[in-house]
Image 1 (cartoon, rainbow, N blue to C red):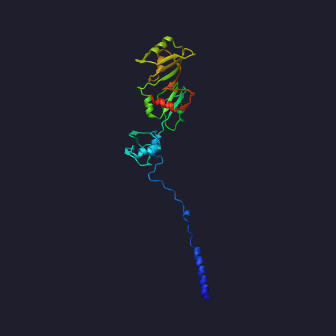
Image 2: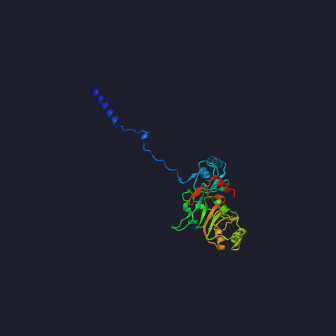
Image 3: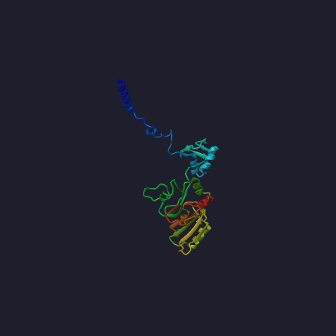
Length: 278
């Protein structure tokens, strides 16, 4: 009888011990530990192949091939590691030429009168740069200048090579202006402009000058290739005329067609190709 009682007590004790065993958690119940960033990780760094593709040199897939063959250098060292990341401040050379990761953009503005081309003006001043502020996420610069009182075509870009090319004094860019004078242009003055006029010791030649059809003789069209600043104003001021309105209607083959005053547009592929051929 005693043995039987002992056995029952043992069973109860065993059951009690089982109930006191702590609950074992499964792996899924363990708290998740957030992944730690890799040492020296830079959130602003981008893959080298994307950097190259953004520069316009080639596609990402093609960039991988160039990287693998050792055609790309970062800060003076050849990099052929797939997935290598670079910062925007790094110097990256593609086939020996330094590249920029920004996509090159070209924006044409029909500038209204009263807007300055200068990048820095007072807070109360109106600038042409403000008119194209939403045209690109990149910093755009004007190609040449139009004075505050001149309206018409003004090109903006982040392509430093193109800006340098189009503003180079050795490359004469065709421009056409429509001029409104304070009085009719005398025919003898018309001939002086047509034959070439000397201003400040320099002979200024125009390609063509004409009276605007079906308009008063104070409305003049003038085409020239000179890169001198304010040259059209200087021509008419030299002859004793005041300019009421000066509008650049053609610049480097670009026109104001379908571009209202104060509006901008990105150049079409054909327009850009024509610029590249200058």
